[in-house]
Length: 258
Image (cartoon, rainbow, N blue to C red):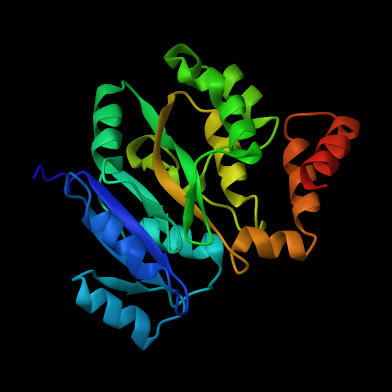
């Protein structure tokens, strides 16, 4: 097996006692090439430590302020490799993810991020086609053209209509992106905010159209909770304001959350 552990790290962000954590870990262990794997948590417990010990994965404890973006930034800071993927504990990856990522990144001249097409997991079943996925794939269509992947204008046009990129499908090229990736004031749109920031930088957004990541939809996911707390509209409106006048942003924010 090709070993790229000196180039790439999966950072697992573990929270409390997630029933899907081991399924994620196994998907990382079953990659066709070998990446480094670490785990971070701000909720240390025996379940997480035992899982780390079982799979020989080092566990780093965030003893500072906890939270989604704080944990992501903390985990990212524990890595030294050229490429870093923030893996969410309830999602998983196809076996070819790391190999496709490293081939794309190493072939690019100045990559910022690599990310993939994805499917959903609903009630334990993989759903690769529904209205939401079709809309997101339509939004991402321009980035299938490598010339557009290098274009700030096209990247911003894609992001101006919403966030079609699955956050855990993203690998960051750490040499080409800021040291601190995520800001701490969103609950559901923090990854969109980071992408908006990166869209203004020189470099490439490498979009892989193959379904290589899987996003689990369940009642306790952060996105679901954000909708329940009615925060999504406020966050989406703030993000749309980065691209559009106020009156358009209000309409888009309403349409996206209605």
